[in-house]
Amino acid sequence: MATQHAAEVAAPRPAAGRARAAPGIAIAVIAGAQLMVALDVTIVNIALPHIQAALHFSRAELAWVIDAYTLVFGSLMLLGGRAADFLGRKRMFITGLALFAVASLAGGLADSADLLIGARAVQGVGAAVASPTALSLVMTVFTGHDTGIAWAAYSMFFQIGGAIGLAALTTVASTAIRRSLPSPPAAAARHPVSATPPAQVLIHALAHGWGAAFAAGAGFTTGRRAC
Image (tube, rainbow, N blue to C red):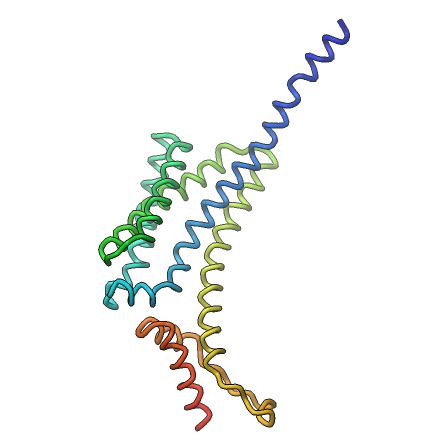
């Protein structure tokens, strides 16, 4: 009898272990969703010169590659959160992520300006559903110590997503500058020439592509040397 009682007491322990592991998985999924939503706002800036060259965008149309996503995302967030309250948070969270993923694939395969802008708008719809629903899940699903961890992950990964995009853009512009700078003579190494501002290189890249931006950086640098 004592052995049977001990076995009954020990039996639920694996289930409890799985229950403790579940919040960690949920937090990781929510954090990953927030990272993608925020990253997609800024990371596309790097591809704008290539998009313009490949799909023959005008400058006005090129702005909509970013604006179509951000405007739809911002304007539908309240509606997305409200839909989660009525239709189910988990269901709407998965729906938002699926919509975001399918639209991302469609945008990557787009062969026209209209298709790409439309895919970006649908991405915004998916983000507008997934992001507020993730916040709702943080507020209702987690309890105790897990709540603080979920809040921290939700906020931190949204900020990290935006920072990664800006850091990548800065890195690309800085690389264009460094490659365009001529190697200084040994005597002039103690008096380095100031680099071309990244904004100038980025603007030139948007107008003529990254390849032309490398050459432009050299031209800006030569002009400064002559002065």
